Image (cartoon, rainbow, N blue to C red):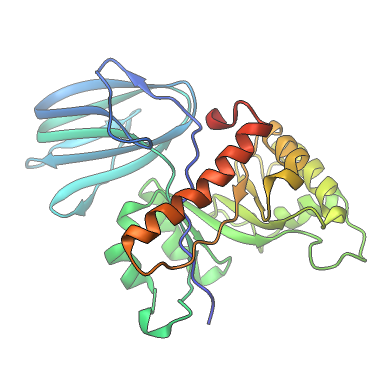
Length: 304
């Protein structure tokens, strides 16, 4: 039985503007549109950087919406129509056809669940199967991190058709064999293999894992990350090194990975607390330690 872990990853990678007054709901979410009785109306969402948006509506009859010319598919969540989309930088027209009693559009962070399929250590809490996740978790996600097995292709294809992203967790090339030489070409080959990112239904991978003592894989990995943009199999894939330990020992690696156009995931374990009151400060302290450490080393960290 595998260990289960819920990972909330927030990437501040964009600022979203529109012609409407924005309302900050908290430190993660900004409401862009909140209107009632919308009928045959077009909005423009302008993104200087890529990012996620959340749309929720109360559609009447056969009312529909298109975003940058593509018809949106909605999921029924608690009687409302919801969808999430990752958009590139630029202007994106959101066109409403028909009538919606309400329309809400929000700028949201990327929200992930890792890892599927997996169950908790305490078996009575499980199983965290697809039925359970569909009922309690999946509607709230932008991205799912799963194991790299072919039997998940059908689920991944349907998930991606809804506008969301399907990531896998991949072992860092060369990590488990320090005596066997590895170079950038071998790292790229493993990244793009049919077992990992070579599958068309995979959007990217969290590459597990990197820490100061694995010297033999750090430089080849960085070289591969820089070269991935020219690799036809990897140019449109998300490659995210998974960094364990403190940021202090990985500053150069993190800096070079980000400068090559990639993001970095940080590992933090949050042990279960007896009460919600105890859990909140524990969670906050764990993430704040990463944030403060990174801000000291990278002044622009909050906008990366």
